[in-house]
Length: 129
Image (cartoon, rainbow, N blue to C red; front, side, top):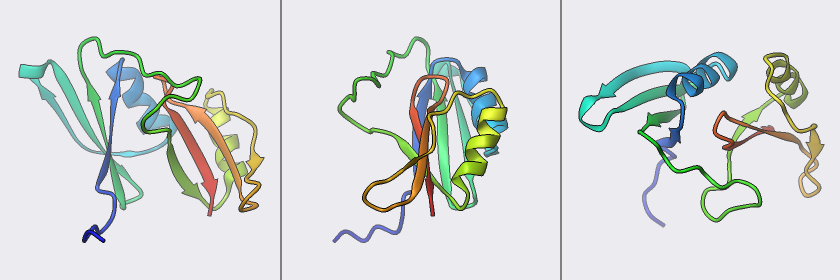
């Protein structure tokens, strides 16, 4: 086994920086750690704090190709966040105007979960602790 401590960060490339920045900070409530404009790449890099444990790096680049999501595409499938109250999170996100799938029960674990998508259709899951 490699001496890995934990996941350091998750990097996401968005097609509309301002829309995605608003989504991740105002809808999901992630805290901005640092925002940098990299002129030589015409790119923003936004570091977001996720509950003090993890970090999401949100990047913008000119004209990124669309990410295939449906049907299931090869590669990273989705990001999942753990919560103590799936139904409450579902309600709060829905109230902010985000379309969410219904809460379901994982047939293997018996835990509640649901999916929704970020502005670029990246699948995001909330899963019961």
